[in-house]
Image (cartoon, rainbow, N blue to C red; front, side, top):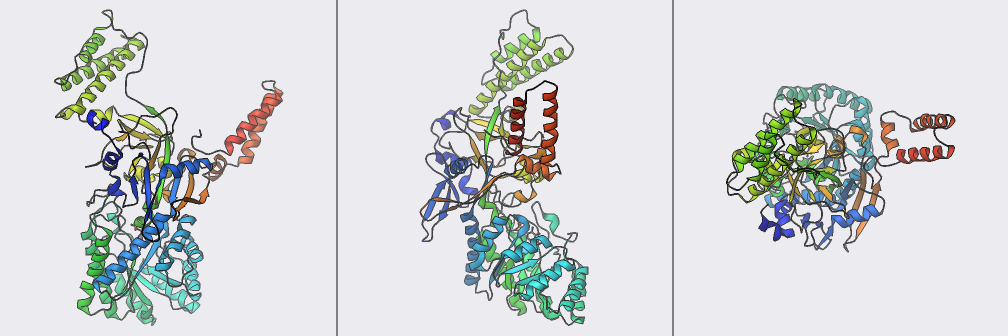
Length: 640
Ligand SMILES: *Cc1c(COP(=O)(O)O)cnc(C)c1O
């Protein structure tokens, strides 16, 4: 970062630098005092902004410290409303002859609080749920109390799954069974005949269209789920034989999650509509077209067809879908179906922010040592290194770097062969870092950076130690190289002059974040501020509401974080509507089958033996056991 930029820095620069307005979807911004705000619209359209730092302070005061998963209920409500209203206006403006009915796929975030909130906020729009397993169906049946909302059942279904759905249908719930594999048809027919319920059947087709993005294996001939055209016709014939073609009402497909390119979305709809029209032609009742998920989130804010972005807006998505359906079905004279989408990611991603504090940093800079003066008695290589570093200037960056590196490596090999002492080696490492840092600083001001030195800022970047586990809270970073917007939620009115990667507190070298969204392209380091002695430094990982909670694991026995749900009120005040304390150490131990009571008893015996053997007093035993039980009930993360 250039000196001038550092001096003139304001929060406007931060907004641009971190791309807040690109990925923030109008929900996040940065205000003059350097704090990130969340913006929600009030009932009359007037907006309210609240600082995330203030919300975090309030949570900490209430005993919910870092790391903390913040759920902002207003954003979940707003996304559900946006999706439904945008479809409604596309339907209206195109003159489409039917309605939109969204369903939320429970697998994307099964947390009870989230599903309850979706059911509540979705009620005016008859927004339903998608269940991919028996457990999800049970949750859906109990939480969704709206007979106009759909429950779409995908996934492998045994008799128990189907019977449960059929019984719910008796209660007036609008359940659809989507046939994923040929063998399921028979089970559905058998159960429905026995229960004497006319089931609502859907068919999941395998489209030939494949899509870009990370999840493209979900589409195409080899996709695991769905029926090919031959299976589909066999199903139609089978239903016809049982006089059940009137039960076949829905066509479903799912291209995969996070489809970045609108062209793929349109191609999928066009192909599906061909199937839809032909099923009508075959005599199936039809009436519903379910496009599955895939509506992408612009994680990096680039608005491109990159894996972490999307090259379309929600408006375009809805209009394109509606137009594509009309374009195909109108020419065949087929009535417009109810449009269903199963958007998961786009519905919940925005509403959760993971907040965590930075515990410590490592810098790749010289360490202060006594006796650093290099004299003529020192080894020739060390003196050469000193001289190379002393002569660094703007015109010899590459050359000085090569020299310094060479002499340092010579010193390392001399050390290995016992020819220089540990102290001399330490001096060499220090000198090298001093030179490299000087070169890095000069690079900031240089017109052109020599190719060999481009990686230098990354190599010399700091490590910021974050009080969280990537495996527990941001598993997609580890598993699929996902990038999330990551930045400090305060101090954005100061230039972030350090460049760093993030390491978590698991003892795993994969527990790190070293890919970040940048202004142009992804970057290897993130710009951050110096830590202050008297103030916590809090970062936020944004857009983490989809999939992250569900897929997280207990690596190193770091458990669930604290969670707080907030609702921003019409007067701008914050209501801490729900809170869940994170796992205690006893909780995580019991997940892996330890019995905390038994552990305590064993430790007690150990302590008692120490009393008997005279190593501690009985009073000390009391203190030791107290420490043990206090730890057992404590948070699994670093506590201040
Ligand atoms: C995972 C999944 C979804 C959700 O996809 P998003 O991209 O998160 O919207 C929808 N439908 C099915 C069948 C799925 O498997």
